[in-house]
Amino acid sequence: MAKLDDSRIAWTIKSKGRFTDRDIAIAANLSTSRVLQLYREYRRNNSMPKLKKTCRKRRKISEEERIVIRKLYGIYNANTCYVGKILDSHGFSINV
Image (cartoon, rainbow, N blue to C red; front, side):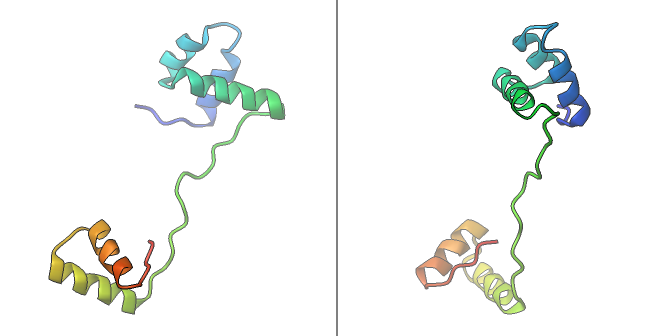
């Protein structure tokens, strides 16, 4: 599956009058609703839509927090979700 980039967005919007939304979606490997969303944003701002960064910013954890997490992982041999629940039950919150 190809990633959506600026050139694919431009092609999707330029193809809007020539092809149906479904044909554009199949050719661009998008959903029909995403094609409509891109075109709606184009009409609203009168410029090509820009993609935003997809991930949230990660918070730096201190070395002490890292040691606690590794120690709990060694004791319980559990994944990060479970270790996070253990920390929450003890009143600590480490969201990374």
